Length: 235
Length: 265
Ligand SMILES: Nc1ncnc2c1ncn2[C@@H]1O[C@H](COP(=O)(O)OP(=O)(O)O)[C@@H](O)[C@H]1O
Ligand SMILES: [Mg+2]
Image 1: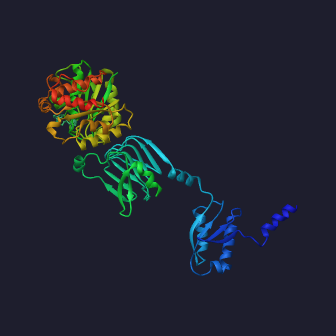
Image 2: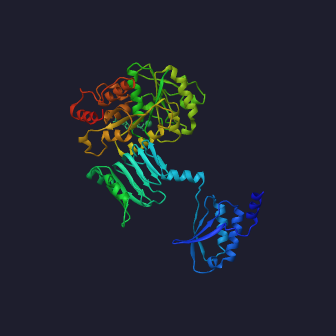
Image 3: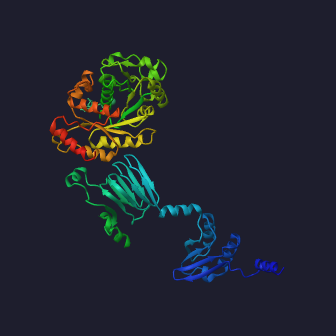
């Protein structure tokens, strides 16, 4: 019986603290309880914004992180919280942080971080696209292309096109055992091979495995011996 | 039960029709029962290369659409009783035939022949799809130049998606290093790029052109270097292992070819 009355008290009691505000070096963090209902959260946030003028008033703008703990919040719920926080003029949401993600997102992240092996000769007219890094066991022939959001590693000859970091990763690289590409791109930086005539005159482009990367500050594609890749990636 | 081999290339003018005519002739020389099918509808010329253009009454489209029996459309070769041609229609276009119809025609012919050689039109559209639909095996013809090899590569990629045995390669119009001064691709570069088995090479020989003009396939001529190339290919198709070029050929050029290929033998 005592137990029941305690629960009752918690539900109706005045002190809630489902929304707490903490200041850190990087700005403010709004920590939201992850056990109560979303409706309760909204209500309390609304109250706090109305009352706590010191934090939510119209002072100098502060960046806040919204931390929802072990509560999953989808796009819709993010919109609701953002909508409420619009009333607090000095607040700008930096990010939402949560300890949980959807299965779909987890799958994407896993792909993004993973290495996908592909055993194939990529022939003229064929394109192989991979999320994350790709390890190609075979050649890319002229007119064929391999592309990845991460790095491209080719255990074979690159004669066609390779695209690394296709969604903007400037640190991605293209490695090939034999590097004779028509074209390489990393993020939006392009490299075109010298004309065929020149190539014939000078023999193969490189005598050993190399990788292509974006050299700074020129923001140009350069080549370096693959055995020095470890130094590049340490930087 | 015969086997159907489609002769493809992607690019036009590299020698598909010449190859079809000569492989067919060389196999007939070995006593095999051969049917050549010209699928280049609207641009038929296998009949011309074979010297049979005056004998055409019905064609492939007539047979496919049931205007005649398949057997009625076949033309017997002048030289061999065991060699027949099913000519393409000249007055229609590629859309006059569907892959299913082609398959049916080939299936109907198979019991009567050892090999059915299908001459494919250039390109990768309807005509190509028709030609490939009836085949069990594919041969890709290329010449040693960049654009022909690029198109051959494209075709190999497409053939690999079909339900066929791994395609085999013929490099046509190979010339000696001396006469090209490096203006064409090396044969071993072509083979390493395309990465499929080499069925044979045919030298560039103006006798081939003359023979086509006379309607007598070069494979009939025992003294021509191109002819020996085709005969060797026919023997390889029959399962013999014939070295890429026989030793008793003219020295310089063939010795060089042999040494080029010896590296990857
Ligand atoms: N090995 C060869 N040497 C010289 N000429 C050739 C050779 N092979 C083919 N040709 C010529 O090239 C032209 C195109 O050949 P063809 O067989 O009609 O090609 P395709 O059927 O692929 O369009 C023809 O004039 C033919 O005589
Ligand atoms: Mg032709």
